[in-house]
Image (tube, rainbow, N blue to C red; front, top):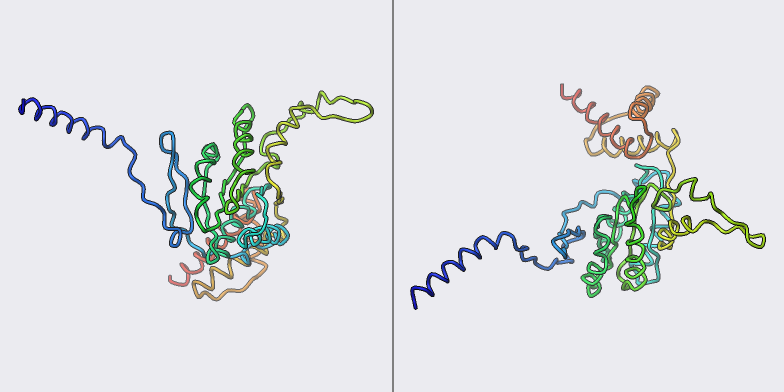
Length: 296
């Protein structure tokens, strides 16, 4: 009997040894006093929050030329942090114009007051009820941040997401908001064919139901902020700002000149865009080159 029991135990131990790597690892609770941000990871049928090491070196003053958008989202965030009513926000517009940077700058602004940031991917938004449940009992205020929220033609996921947002956002606790960025105002492609079957009834024009269905998703956000492509003057203002910041950190003497301005414009033309990301990258390249030449 003992020999058979020992054989069974040895076999069971062997099976458990092979199964253990397949089981989800035990996750410890996040200390939100120390962690300022986390990312939601899908794992099997559930998921978990992974703490992120995030720098707070980006400030609101670094965002040049988007004063109106910055002030509106900053005001909404101040209301939220102070426990006042605030809206979920959709930041839409041209790429590289400061949408994501604005959200991260607000974290730096209000981290000491208890603001925390949770990054969640578009494909994981169906997990919103679970994420909200994990955060509801915490004393901090959490912004759920979904970067680049959009859907391509033929994708039906936005209908599922619409119902999830209805259930999750309308019943979300007071310490949870959703901020999302997108290149599309209504998050989904809008086609000319959507408007082909409008009907006139009693003198009123009623849009096709397909249009209403698509627009309904973005209506879940109470605050819409639009970001537009940079003019050349706006682009150069941002270039000057980032060169000043980078040069100060490197203790590099520099002076704005017509030649430097032309170099920045050529850089933008070569990249095929003129936005804040391009300006930041040019500033890093130019300051790095000046430092390399000075050492040589």
